[in-house]
Length: 68
Image (cartoon, rainbow, N blue to C red):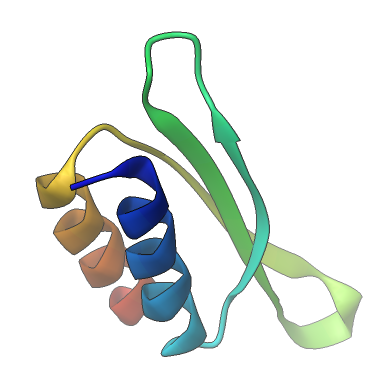
């Protein structure tokens, strides 16, 4: 899977949750660092940050988004 395909899969996963993508950056080792957040009560934010190294990490990231 190409980096662009992984990026698109991440964006689709985030769009199906209540989160929004804050940033996706490439790390030095070729992995992608992603941070997503969503507003909570009283103008606070819940954020999740993860490192995506391959396709299996996308599934894990989706599960974490759905739990919150």
